[in-house]
Amino acid sequence: MQASSHLDVVRRIAVDIAGPAADAVDRQARFPSEAIDALKKAHMMSALVAPEFGGFGCGMIELAAMCEVLGQECASAAMVFAMHQIQVACIVRHGISQTFFREYVGELVERQRVIASVTSEVGVGGEMRTSLCAVEKSADRFTLVKDASTISYGEHADDLLVTARRGTEAPNSDQSLVLVRRADYALEKTGAWDTLGMRGTCSPPFKMSSSGNVDQILKEPFATIASHTMVPFSHILWASCWLGIATAAVMRARAFVRSQARAKPGTLPPTALRLAEASSMLQTMRANVHDVASECESLMQSQAGTDSLSSIGFALKMNNLKVSSSQLVVQIVNHALLICGIQGYKNDSKYAVGRHLRDAHSAALMVGNDRIYAANASMLLVLKDE
Image 1 (cartoon, rainbow, N blue to C red):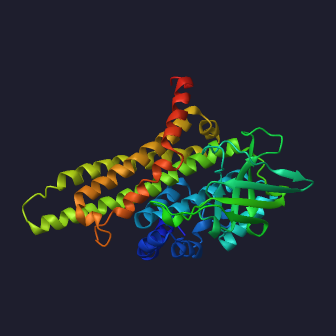
Image 2: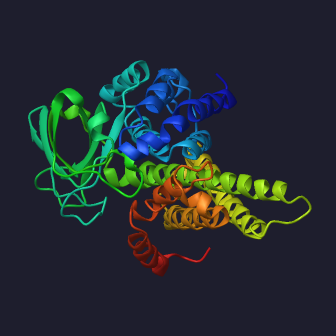
């Protein structure tokens, strides 16, 4: 299957399956099972895995495009797909040399297992690079208990990738990434998921208790995994989901303006200028997302790119992409709402953008923008002029 056909498959799933179910997923705050089941059937959950291990070998650009087309139809389905791919990336880029993870990748390809992330934790204030819980080892076994402030689609996942201190004596920043299997962990729900938007991601808090073999611990430090893979994949694929939301809103706004123009031939609708402004913002957002995705893929494919992935300049670029995209998606969808007026405000209208606007507001909260600005300010103080 060629690259274009991979995207075509995902586009058909988005239009034919994810889109028709999107309102129900949002209204009922339920998992987008139809879309994820279809993606599994098409073997897209292992799209990132190299062909030598049975996958399609998709790169960053192609995955970003898949998230974008899914985001146009159902933001929750797009975000679940994106978050799963982020976990797959961590495994294939940092664990494939370990026997356990190489065998696990084969199982992932065959069974299309869904992997969720457990990086958040009660008591650390949303700081991914800090853990209170620790891996407790005894001979070749480990136990791990984590009080997570959120686990997206946790009840619907087959396995979890969990951050924790490397050991009970390790400092909070000395972390490992651990794969725990469905048969070896228990989740105790400690809250609900009744949110403004992204309702289908089903992300309540849980207390997780698990055990396993020490081979299930990635050998590379989480600090390296985070900077080289988790952060860039997260910010690019998230931004691609948001780009999908923004694109869908502008498409509805464009359809509304065209309907006004048809009603009064030869007259420029008063909303047309605002549509032009929204289109310009969308182009800026798309160019930024695509440019950073292209650069990131190039660096990841190059041996010489490893140092760049750890650089301050690259970290700033990733952070800036996240912040700018999370701000633009809200601005663009809000423009679409103003263009469509009451027809965009009504949930039963074909021009409705309420779900899009509610989903868009989650973007600034996924790793809070204020936290990112503070990190950028610190890095800019030590960044050397190029």
